[in-house]
Length: 118
Picture 1 (cartoon, rainbow, N blue to C red):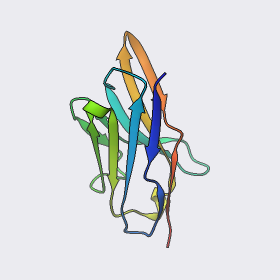
Picture 2 (cartoon, one colour; picture 1 turned 135 degrees about the vertical axis):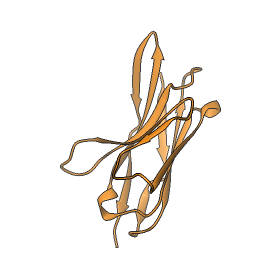
Picture 3 (tube, rainbow, N blue to C red; picture 1 turned 120 degrees about the horizontal axis):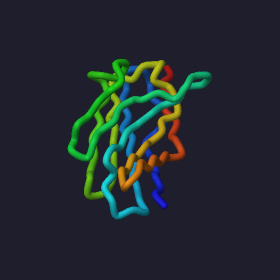
């Protein structure tokens, strides 16, 4: 069973930076895509950024030019560097890993809290 373990959340002031990490274990396959989603209180979960196993990245408009996603295929690990954080970035951030092995398999981490506050 694939497990995703996230780390790196916390409290930061507006304009600050955080780096989230997520490692997938329990599989010999490289995830076809990995990414980050977030869910703020009272809102639906939304895409933050994704990256394919070939390194093609995409971002939500709200985080473009501030967040950078990267991954280490050898270790099935994905990162997101978050700079110039804003109050509205406050949310629980969830890691996602997607595998196409005959059929689609989606896995989620438990979530890590990011709070941007002065």
